Length: 135
Image (tube, helix red, strand yellow):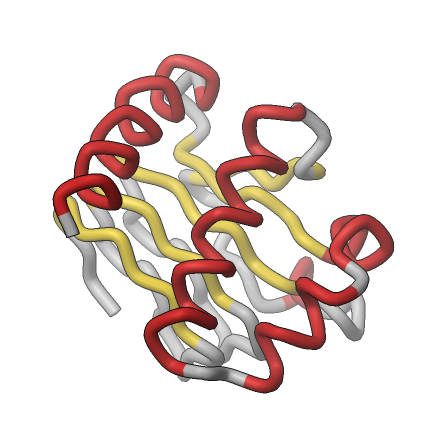
């Protein structure tokens, strides 16, 4: 998956997820293949790391991994998952939402090392809110 500005929620990815990503937001609610984030220079991703193995699958050359600890990130992530459930009826996503506060510890935020995610999120969160209200 290469993203240049879209908002996407997926339930899993193969190898090279978010490779050369230059913008946008990706939520991964399942497993990823190897080499996640290789060449990522923009945007960010929330990844559900249920089995605590993502650290071995990410390409750390250009990205940082951090906990989803900021309330604005938590709210944003939950909103994206809620939209996913609304549009797809995903049982897996609904399971995460049903106990969101406990599952939250299993998510990580992946961002380019040179980007301030707070700044990035403010811009992308505003765009996401506009898209939700328009859709």
